[in-house]
Image (cartoon, rainbow, N blue to C red; front, side):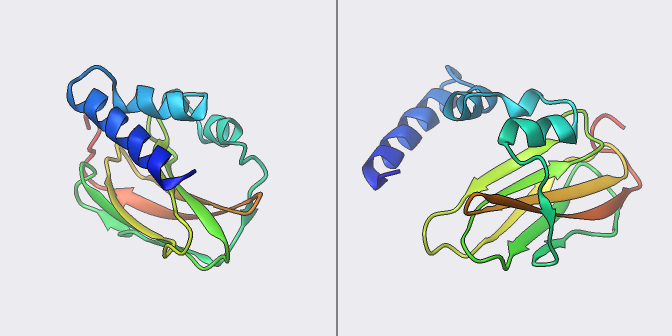
Length: 151
């Protein structure tokens, strides 16, 4: 995507979201042709993203607490040592909506992201990395002692 068209679409989407005309889920669905934020299972998310059959990789590192005392705010960091990484996708397997985030990386960007996720119960955090036309995956289990999704 050209820089100007990216900036233009980002500014328009940001204005629409901030004024309440467009929700972030609607913006994501409009940009990708389907609404992965409404998927109810990891398999459904992977299918919608075209990432079924992703290869497990030790070159993807997930930094997350083994035990999260409060599931309302769980810090998660994902880095990829896979050359040509263009996307990092985060999933929380046991959440009602497992899709957590998708990061599209520009050319030359360091493939590392940090986020804070809400987790209702103990679950796997799954990282899906796209490099070229292939998808790779890794996971880490996080034990939640106090639920963040109404628990």
